[in-house]
Image 1 (spheres, rainbow, N blue to C red):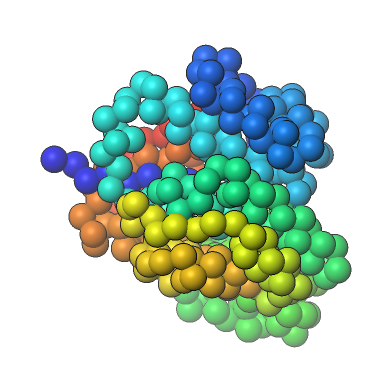
Image 2: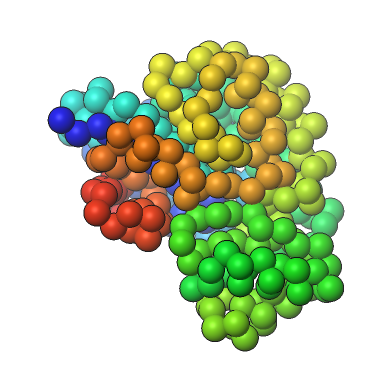
Length: 302
């Protein structure tokens, strides 16, 4: 019998139209958008379904939008294949997606999770506005080559490794001049550079000013031990209690995302059937690079 794991996407997977078909077909999904709009103070469904892209792509909007749209996709799966949802044994989420995974696992309520995600997006946007910064993917390079790019680009400014996504896909994050220099060095090394459309240097010390606001938000909500194991981005280990969850989520803002290691933890625990629940197919693509033999299905209306 398959051991099922759910994967929830992070910022960057958003696109205009996400969730529109699901919300029209499944009342439980539509209700999530309606409840979210009351909490957020604006019509989230309208932005997700119709844009404009300039607003949807902002950190303040994209984070709650992806959180809600992923949980809406989960409601579609629950209606169509309840045995899959009931049979899910473990979960993980990429950056923002870790919050979605924790809500699915019962560690936080939908409402509390959304309030924290909203505060997280606001705090990260403020930190990004205070430090002109960027992120760039280093594709087709090995870890040693990426380390050299980072070291050499540091002559132009502060820069760190922010995401270890899969073999041949590592994300660097830091000051804009350093990221621009890194992009040049990646190409010179025979790789491919892709500048990400994000507000700033996420998962680096440049986000430190966001931690206080996030800690305050996490202290105002009730957190329970997850009913199923959720893997942490920070150390690729299982979350194991409310205080540890708070600590890890705060650290996640300034520390690199160990996504490849998270997936390998799930595989080592016997998970052999994966579902990417939410907009896009990024996590399925990463899975192919981590272990192409593993089946990963997408759950969305793309």
